[in-house]
Image (cartoon, rainbow, N blue to C red; front, side):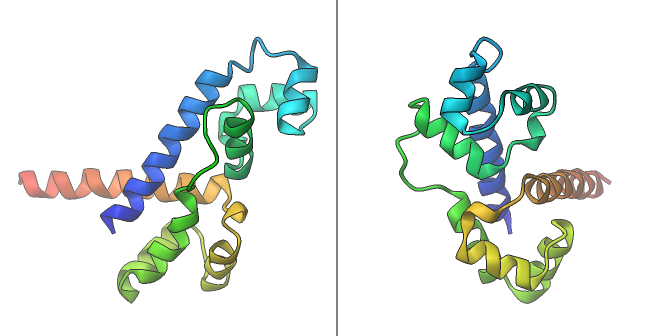
Length: 139
């Protein structure tokens, strides 16, 4: 299960690097719209709430700003890794991310369909459970 969460953490590190490097605050509204296909109003919303960026939008922004060459996207592998987990672990991961088997099948068919909230829930769940397990090991 560790490799699933390493992949999720890798995505969040990538997202942070893209948003830092894109320098959206100094980018004009026209340039933002050209690069992302999103409205200028969306720019201000995303500046205040970066967690609203969808993974597919992050990859588009990274590619158009030259921060990513368009190769393998790690999120493309996420649904496959989850389905390869033993069933008890798979159920835990699905529950943690508010996913169902049907949603996972959709994510497997179309990796662009991952929602930022699902990934954030998985990351938060993993962090809290890592903390709990490390506290148990100390006692």
